[in-house]
Image 1 (spheres, rainbow over the protein chains, first blue to last red):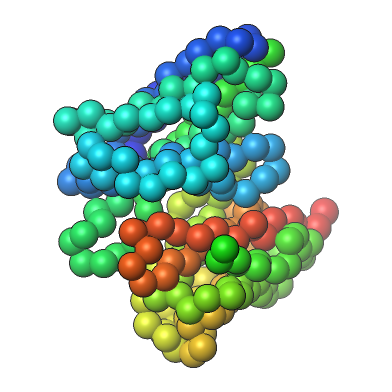
Image 2: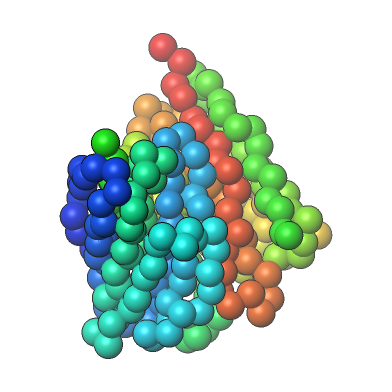
Length: 115
Length: 112
């Protein structure tokens, strides 16, 4: 158990809909990263938040947005969903800034299916 | 942009065989990480490397941070069925805002 939690585990929705994925980082971790993994593909970095502020953006679509709240949990919002958005979405956290170490610890993921 | 080449893409192995995979980058890295992902699960950190030349073991797994700082390898000795999965390398450069660059993964499959 990495200490990172994600909900829900599975999500099935229709095209055009909007969903929210939730992540709670490990205790003490200030940084949260979101990744998308399509079937049999690698990890695509979407966005990073650090202590409530957006830190870096990757290949995130304009239809997607995220935020990190004062209690450090994060939400990824996906709107106007398309079939191609079906994927595993992972959240990871790390304790950046404490010693320069870069290990990211991953949650169990949310499997999104768009029908 | 920075590139990470991970090879091989997939491997068919017999139980008991030793396995080797590697990653090379176009840039000098100051961190190399190796993760394993089981189907439908999140990646799990196996080994972290922070010094050029560093050789680190975790059970049957051994990883090294290349002297040139542009490569790393992971060896698995005496493979067992639960070694099946996808292995990812990841690295970062200095002042990278703690971003990781990811390899495409090596899929390990046990021959029937």
